Each structure stands twice: as structure tokens, then as C-alpha cells.
Length: 336
Image (cartoon, rainbow, N blue to C red; front, top):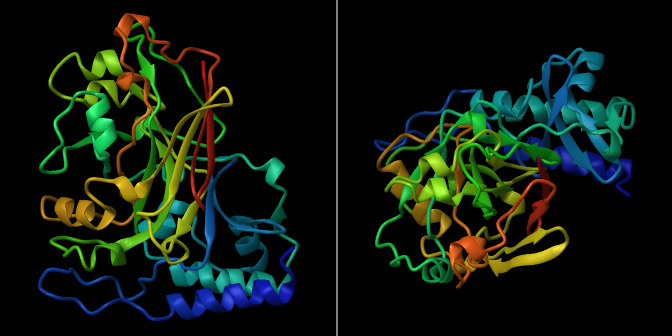
């Protein structure tokens, strides 16, 4: 259990990290707002609350309800994860965590069992997806190893949460499949960034699933219609801040369907690593705080099985999917 001294140390480290302020602007890097600071040294949740969303900070003693703490202490607080990231409220969160620990260390803690999770973000400007980013996945599907990152997109209607459900669009499709992926969440605006600097723009990382309808994905030359049905982008349960992830390209990744392991690999096998993906995308478009980037899935998907498609056991209503990235938490959802 985390005692008050450890919690204060955590809050103090956050304050030190976020107190550095915005980086100096360069010709290729837009200036951040004067109040800008990304969150540090935290595991964050987005909560469903009556009338909207709220932010949570996970500790070993429970989850700090940021909204309740802010109201009780009369301090400003980020309304939710999007507010935190898009409006640069890292310093605001740091001050609130510190005050909560000092004045009421246990007064606003939620029990894990009582939490209603929301998608980690609910209104990003962009949801960027990466296809065929693991060599063996490309090979299992008979796809040439890409020379450049094949990017596509989902929309906000696809966002889903830990413990959520996906209502399968069976009127349009029947070949449903999982894709567990490392997800990048941005905390700084970036454009034309180098690979060397790319990770400096990351607020944190999360577990995600690029849920897919393969018959729609292959219906035309474009992936999008097989990827963005309602609920097809589960994300969570946590955003682990970037400073706590030593190397995003050395994390074990797993998928289990009804308790049976289907994927077990490592992000060190990406064809294009996280630095390369961010740099590449930033030369095409401006990446905004709160945007998310799904980085691809390894081999082990149903789509890659070496048997006729009509003989494969595609996912169906009642199936339960569990996805995990090392150190980022387990994301679970059910199909109906």
C-alpha cells in the first residue's frame, strides 16, 4: 500500500516535472501555451460520471476522483482527459493532487470495483491507425512488407471503454476479428518533428484494440469501412504517462478470447517504431494534444489463419476479449 509519504513524493515529482513549462519554439515546432505542461508520473483514468466525464488518478489505495477533490478543496481541476491534454492542464492536476494528499489523502478515493470507465479520450481531433506494422502479421495475411507506413483512420463513434460492449453490425458483416495494439496519446502539438524528438510529444501510452470486420475491410481497396463501426476502438483502462514507460518498443502484447491466448508478441518487432510513426505522420498533418495513434498489431489474428475464410471461427456475440500491454493494464470488452 502507498503511504502518505510515498503519495506526497509522487505528487512532488509530478509538480517538479510539470513545473518546467513549455519548450522553446523552433521553426518546426509551434509554441505551446504559456501554461502548458504534460502530466507526469501518473496512471490516469477517464471516468463516466452523471452528466458527463471525469478524471481519475490511480494509486495503490484507490482512484483519486479529481472532480470531487477539486470541488471539495475549491481548486481548479481538469474536467476530463480531453480537457487535461487539449488544454495543457498538467500543472493544474499536479497542484490538485498535491493539495488532496496534504489535506484529505483518503477523502476522495474510489474503490476500483465502483469505477465506471469511459474511453480514455472522447473527443480527439484525430484517430490515426497503422496497418501491417509487424513483419509476421504482414506475412500471415500475404501482404507485402510496407515501404512506408500505411495509415488510415477511425472516427469518434468507434471509441469504446474498458468493460464496454461492441454491438456487432451483423446486418453488414460477419467476419469479426481482434487486433490488440499499443496506442500513443499526444500531449503536445507537433508538426515536422524528427525521429529523435518524436517521443517528446507523447503524453502517455495505453492498451487498445483495432476491432475489425474483415469482410468490410476487404470489400474495397480502403480499410476504413471495416474499421470504424460503432465501438470498434476500445481503449483503456489507463493512460500511463510517458515518463513511466521506459521504452514503448519493448512491451509484451497479448490477446485472449474467452480466456484462450491468441496473440503473444512484443512491440520491439514493429516494422516502423513509435519514433518513426510519429515523425512520418507529423510531416503530413499537425498532430494535436488529445489525438491518438494505434500502432498496429502482430501476428495471431483470425484474418491470418491458413484456412479458407468460410472455415475460420470468427468472433461472435457472447465472446469476451482481453487485451494487455506490459505495464499499461488489461483492456476487456464483450461482444453482443
